[in-house]
Length: 226
Picture (cartoon, rainbow, N blue to C red):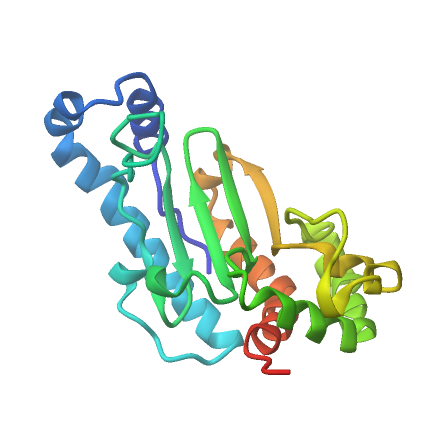
């Protein structure tokens, strides 16, 4: 799908927001934000969900529920800047409410474009079962992350790790080192200039296709009951 969704104004807005991250400035620029950021980004998400549905049928959600608010939650942060300096969305049936499930993620700013996915939020109760599932299906897991389409687009999986495991999984990390991870996600970064390219959606499609097998595997992992 060749289409240019964004203009230089999208990039300029976030650059200026980074220099003027306060409510007074944002309120003065609200109509500009709506026209050059919020609406174009929503239109991109609408089409992105259709592209995802074409390769992995899903119950299409309300696109608005897939887009994260630009307002930051500053309650527990030392940084009290009220606004995010990027536009982001989760591409999944559950939208932002289901970001604990394996899904795809996009993040656009004046500096970069992120395309990624996987299982970023895995709670402590679920994590041992996820690790157990991966260990029991380790060869399948390795074949997915070593597949050319995954490696050529994303390179490798990312995520924080424990130094060692305890409990029933103690010692298994020697045979299955990747179960040390606490998160299982992947991400590719592009320069923000790609936002002005009519091949942006095609590049996203490549990313969705590259990560689909991984997401399907991790969906089984997070639903594993032992």
